[in-house]
Every structure is written in C-alpha cells, then in structure tokens.
Amino acid sequence: MNGWQTYRLEDFIPFTPDIYWRLLERINEAFWPLHVLAVAIGLTALLLALRGLTFWLASLIPILWCVIGSLTLMAIDATGALIPLAAAAIIAVTSVARSIQSAARPHE
Image (cartoon, rainbow, N blue to C red):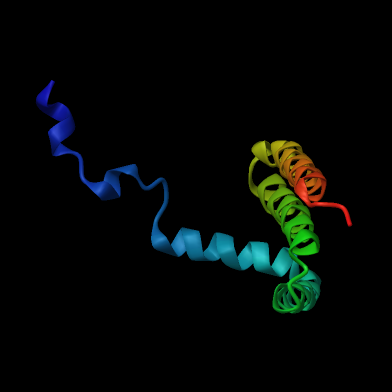
C-alpha cells in the first residue's frame, strides 16, 4: 500500500519534453494556414467585446472552440469528435440565456 508514495510527478508524464515540443511543432505545421485566420478571428472577437456585442461574442467563442478543438484533437486523439457536441450545448445555453434576458426586459 505504501508503494504509491515512491512516485514522483515525472512518473505520470507520458512523454519527454522533447517529444511534447515536437508534437506541438507537428500540429502547427499541419494547421499552418489557419494561424492567420485565427488571428483575424481573434481581432474580430476583441472588436466585438469592445463594442459591447456580448451575444455575438458569446456565440463566436464556442464555434471557434469547436473548430480548433476538433481539428487538434482529431489529429491527436479520437476524443475530438465529442467537441462539437459540447460546443452545440454551449451555443444552446447561450441562446436560451439570450431569450430569457430579452423576455425579462420590460417592453416599451
């Protein structure tokens, strides 16, 4: 029972730092043209936030999360296929919250 006390943090890391950085490098090479698009979308998100368009910003973030997460995880692991479901749930909750917010406003 005391055997677990001999473990160190390094024992739980499945690969060396060199392998991790090489994996990150290969992912970046595979998705290179998308970096420019990601920067443009990030600037758009910043502009939406500065203008106070929170609904559009809240809708943009899960969509981007879905695309980036799916591409990355499907390239590495099969669990990336579940990300679109989570993003759809976030978009649905955002839409419901928006509906509740607009229904709660007094109509003039």
